[in-house]
Image (cartoon, rainbow, N blue to C red):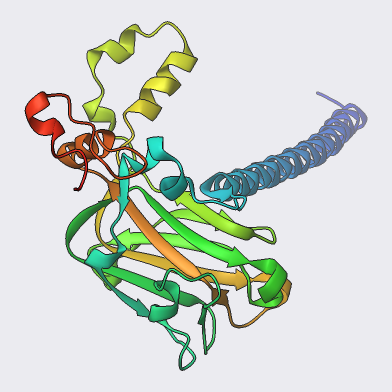
Length: 283
């Protein structure tokens, strides 16, 4: 028979082992909990970093969507013969409307060919210029004449160009940032390239520069019924705006471009045949 003392020693040893094992088990659980907490903290840090990266991407995308354009004294589409032979002003083919205007400072003043008159808004921001064509037209440029030296806080600072079929489905195609412009601000407008229209020759290009040149060569003007200019903000946190001239340009047809190339700066035609040379001057 096993003595009670031996039994008590075994039971006490078992109890001590259980206690020591329990303590070790508790220590292990605490260590695992600390590791889990550390992992959670690291996971939270990673998520925060991912969110920061996403925010940076959004900011980069917003920056890439906007363009800073500087004003020029002359408008190349009117003053440069090589460019004026390819584009023409099509604003007279559209119906113009404004969000608000002071009496005597409306649509007529931005279309009268005078830099001394201007449209002045009369209401809250944003201010809108709506250019509505009766049929779908190709538009490659819109230009504004602004003068910060005279208008100061009335001078637009940020513009948003939108296109669509009706007012209810306009899409923003360009955002323009201006810095105290004095002169013509020309905004080129092109449709987004269609990746399914690329030729097989594009796959044989040797470098990226040739691909970029090919893309620029294939850019097409916007085709739209409605062109809207949204003046988002003014310099010096101004409320109303002054806009002195607005012009819209579209590409010439092949016949118009050919006729433009056959005319000189004085407006007389350079005919090549003897039969037509009699019409080169007015007698």
